[in-house]
Image (cartoon, rainbow over all chains, first blue to last red; front, side, top):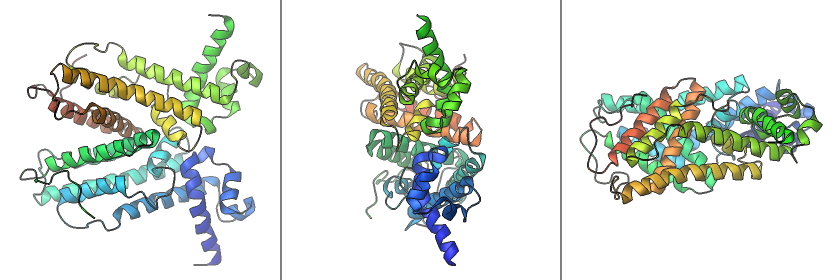
Length: 209
Length: 209
């Protein structure tokens, strides 16, 4: 990595928490200068525009979240267990995330009537996430692990993401983990109900790590 | 209402969609001047600060949403039916709302690392909403309409709000009503499962209006 590329990555890492906390419009050049320790010219030598920097900061924040949640996640095993693990990881693995809450939720709300380029990145992130859930469920149905009749992978993926994101909003607003954990419990029970061949005895219980 | 009070209310009504769309930091004085047709002095004769105006604009947007959803809502009847109606109204009664999405979600995300006064108003709105759900469920249990064992009003209220808000975010980002409607279906089925004495035949079906 060249020195210039290193600086560029360092700017993205420093800018990510600012954009995630303050949003695109709310982030001032002075915030970026303070976070990076660079002057305007030092920052914009590496980026065409604030929009470009914000876009890469979003991708960095999202990638970090995806990687942390995937860390140690099972790539094989029963589809229901893998989906439950994904749900639980969202709620519990919050260390190392870019501060300021979920970049997807923040950017979706922030760009609702705003920046189209950033909004497209949020849409892509949502589509990727829903796609992962959809694929696990589709494979699970194909392998006879999940009930074909009661599990619609398309609907399930929207429901899981909607429930997690909305509950995260509540947990952050109320400064309590409980709504997030209740959402996990509900989703885990729902996922168990889709297990083919009936519920397991340990349904809904947390796995020891 | 005095002329001054009328102007004040008119400013709040005009400012509400701007704050709801652009957030507190993202709303510029020039936006407010354009929306109200007033100069800076004309606006701030009626408000101590941008924060005060934003707070009243939030309350107006939230009150509007609550009133629209309550319009024609049943004040009596079976607790499960009332909760299902509340869920359905959230998804379907979107006409007349202050544009820009749910003021609660927007303000919760917008003030996550920002304005404390506005954040307290969002917290109050969330608490009121959860309180309404909690009361209906608690009354329903007391009247023997809902299963005491499987219905925890505290958890249920968080789950309903989380699911609706998160799914609204997805629906807006994907520009499709489907995720919102799937969330309603899921919540309606879940609420039906809490009905004491077993599920109704018409469980989950939309009532004709």
